[in-house]
Image 1 (cartoon, rainbow, N blue to C red):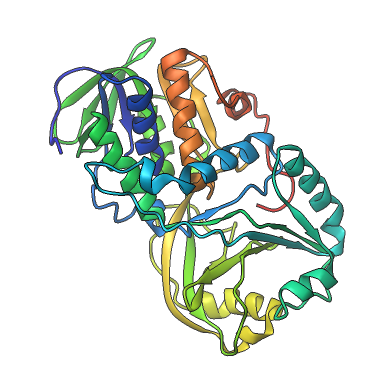
Image 2: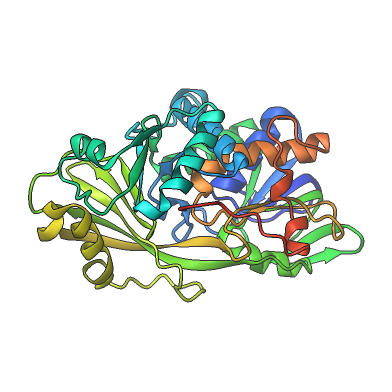
Length: 392
């Protein structure tokens, strides 16, 4: 760990969470010998979003780019423990192929069917289930008000902290330099030149990457760039049922209820999209009883006697334009400033593909594997949202 830096780098990645560390890994993997630094103020990641996430990985999206990013991410995570071993140590992420289940009321069935067709066209295994079939698979579920469900059996979840640290350790082994400090200002003319750190040092680089997650909007401002990305608090809960419940996949509905099996209990919550934006980590210990428990118990009656054992908060890096990430250079601004942020809750599952994509842009001047052009900053400038269709 370096506390200061004075030499110039080829690439300076601002933000050393799972996205920034993925960028650093793919840069070093594709271009050994490249001078890459990652500027991260807190190596404990106490308030980072990834360690506070649920670890879900799914292909159930409507945008082709999101489907393909998750396909790649899941395959990458499956072999992560061995392929990302560093210094002779494996990189465990505890992958669980528990599946994902989206359930919708009758009025949303057509949209769900359309999304399933798109996912299958991209090679995904998706089972479209009637209410009766849902009941047969998941006896505890109330299905009388449902129209259909889509089950992707090869989706699942992993340990988010394991993923973050696996990327970080491997990036360091490959030669990336991690600088423990915070960016306070940026020096720019027609290009980004350098950043000033809180410790007083300056870091110059040929290219800069804003991978600051919920803080990316604030960092963009230091370069004179306006990103529509804001921090949004959300809660995660660990709870148990009062009566026996079968093992469940990651269950999601149109009201943004989302939970899954976790050991002998369950982990999840219900996102309030109207939550006031800001860096708020306070825990509302009544939220589970007021909001989550009624939703979970209404869908699965055995949870009528549910007990919440723990609640914690985290931040979504919410893209207020359309909920999808901003990936790419600042075209029309500083062409050597790249953004990879605004994942709106999907950052962990898309980190492998996002890191690979940014590395390709920097090293080759364009995408080589997956074309993510539609996630570029241009749509922000033109106020042209590119949202998901259906449930998030």
